[in-house]
Length: 88
Image (cartoon, rainbow, N blue to C red):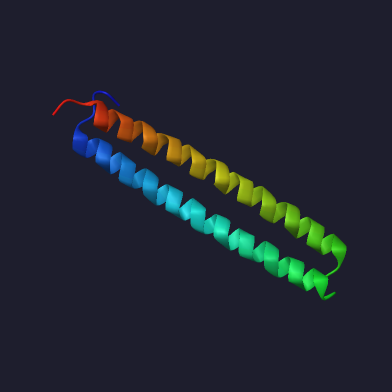
């Protein structure tokens, strides 16, 4: 990243912010789906086996998006550190 211009670094940071935004929205949607699924199980509208299968699927996807979001966050922090360490 040392050989990139300031504008290129800012563009990289913007792209990473967009990626992080998409992953955070995905996490929220998956969380809501888990809550809805739990309510359906509570009222006996779905069997326990169906709940377990979808719960593991949703949680796996949630963790996948969480890791990608954290990866983007670390990259943004590296870009910001590089931008602040440069001389004006």
